[in-house]
Length: 207
Image 1 (tube, one colour):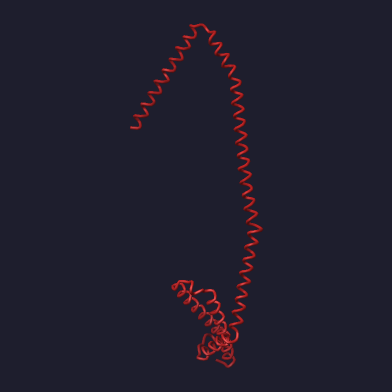
Image 2 (tube, helix red, strand yellow):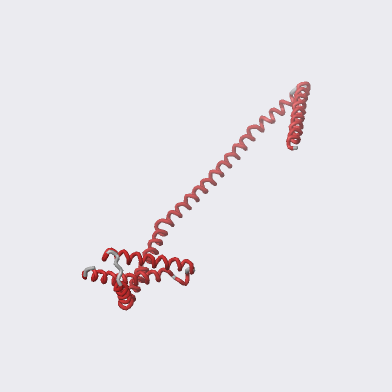
């Protein structure tokens, strides 16, 4: 390994140590350990360390083809220590500002969506339902009124006809009346027998 390669490796590992500090603080900020289940925290920790190891090894492979030396670990520790002493407070403040800004933007977009889109659409939908119900009730009332008027007209039309037919019935000879009565009684008796037969057949079918 040449001297320039060793120098680049040292700088890269110092940078990766500092980046590890950034990633670790970010991970701690979003994890909320007290509010998480221990099993979930355990798997998250394993996944975090595996990802960090893969990133460090990838950078190391790009710099010196993956050769591991003792000074690499020292460089990682130096980078992490430098971050902890010089940049941690600044980064955490910037991270909180970034989180606050993102939350504010999302809250603004949510409120804008509710005011501009959701509430007008919901109001329009409620208005359509109200108009539909109003028109339906009005139409039902109109049909009901028309039906009553037609029924009244039918009664007014057939009532004189009924009186005329009754008068005509009184004027008929007794022989014709008796014939009509016999025919009516015979038809009524036949209808009653048919009804009894159908009722008995239905009872037998149910059994």
